[in-house]
Image (cartoon, rainbow, N blue to C red; front, side, top):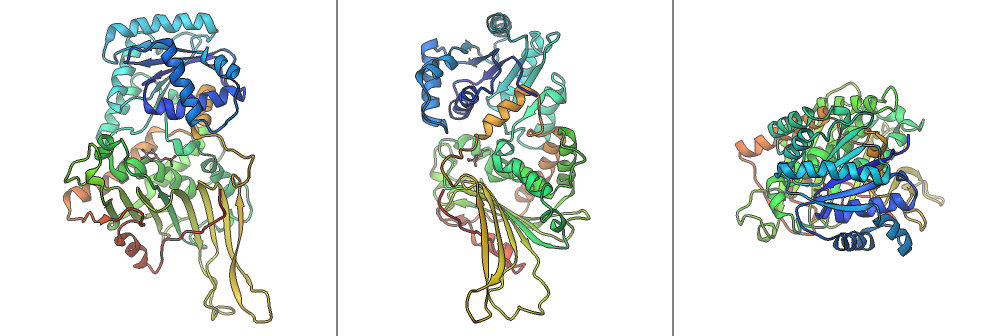
Length: 482
Ligand code: BG6
């Protein structure tokens, strides 16, 4: 399947996401010949901006944020030609009639056949109103063509608001035409998780509670909330990272092999994991970095967490009894995302008087390094029969020349060709909210401390205590420079 002729209509075109992610991703797809020949981008925003301002904005975005360098002005100009702007107040009903006429006109110029991707890069409060107006103005049905809706996270603020939002958009677009973005699913190594698991004889047979001792997934960031205080105050680490990215990665790690690689078969297996997730009230830890309350748009007595660590279990035959430790936090010492599968130790009969004998460990690195690291035991060279842990390290972006596509490149490409495998289906969102909401309620109703941790540390001591109580600790395996 290749992307089909279409117009990409970006609502919120003057915002940060469009600038940082969408323009650079679209331009890279364009350079690589991955956009359809018959293609146009219509940027919709509330500001009154001229075509030259739009081009300047898009060019600056490409210069500042694109992963690829060295394009010619000619290439950029050809891309900019496909771009135009339509000014609209999202509440203004009249404006939508004009938008429809404008899109029909663009169809005539670029032969885009009535196909539309409506990308809502706007605050979630506008999702329902924009979808409704699109419908009321005849933009959600156009014979012999397709109309798709792309929505950014957060999809709801809690389960109730997610259900209501879903009801609104589902009354307008069928599920198969709704693309709920979780940008972690577009990352190169996230897509690799299934390949590593299901295309290798030596991983899959061990991937269960007989051989795996525990799993750790860490999402560490060095930045704070920056300019996003208003949003983050409502979200916190639990809703911002756990509800979506962390649970999505967990479901890929723990799912059963799907019957086929088609969209629904994969999603069916992921949702089963989310439905089987269990957690106890004492197995969640939160924290707030020192200085958070002084950030812009943050309340001086804010109770918002910037760090969460938890221990969950998956109540099914494969995983019963295996703890999954997840943590995410801002202002930590390093930015990285890593999955650690720690295997059980062998019976202590032959080599176990040796103190250095570590467990076998498989690490899947999502970023900044992209690769797989394997730790096992081998004899230390020399006459003494000493054993030491050694490693094999595969890094696919550590060497020059391999520059993985940005997540949004893959995601935009997939929307235009109608493949929603890397997007979240409603029931996945629903079960993620059910899990997260349980925790949010404990925090609201119970007596749970919100310790402050110093920036540049690995969160509050309680996060370490959570693993220590089980005789384990957070693991981080260093690798070469990227
Ligand atoms: C976003 C969160 O979804 O993911 C941000 O809202 C977070 O708070 C970001 O910083 C992390 O994404 P990445 O791709 O930089 O790891």
